[in-house]
Image 1 (cartoon, rainbow, N blue to C red):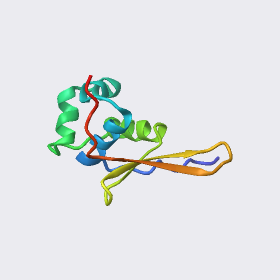
Image 2 (cartoon, one colour):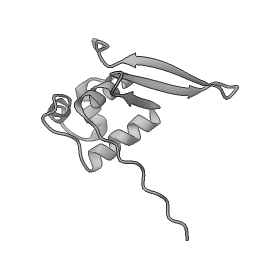
Image 3 (cartoon, rainbow, N blue to C red):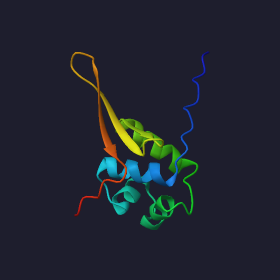
Length: 103
């Protein structure tokens, strides 16, 4: 019987949470609905008051993986890595300081 290795633990800090939310084009309220938490909780994560843990941290990691989101703290930027039809990797960058879309 083969055991699967646990998924790598993602450390979610305020900048990476905000960058993921912006990458997804969501408001704090919309992200909180997807996570099953309060908007205030997302705000507290993004201000560094608290960090997500347990199920919330795991859900953020799953959402990030599905969205092909990779955050590079040294560049303060997020990246969407995709494969073209020919199998070549393409990368697009989205700085974390990008303004939010107005509803």
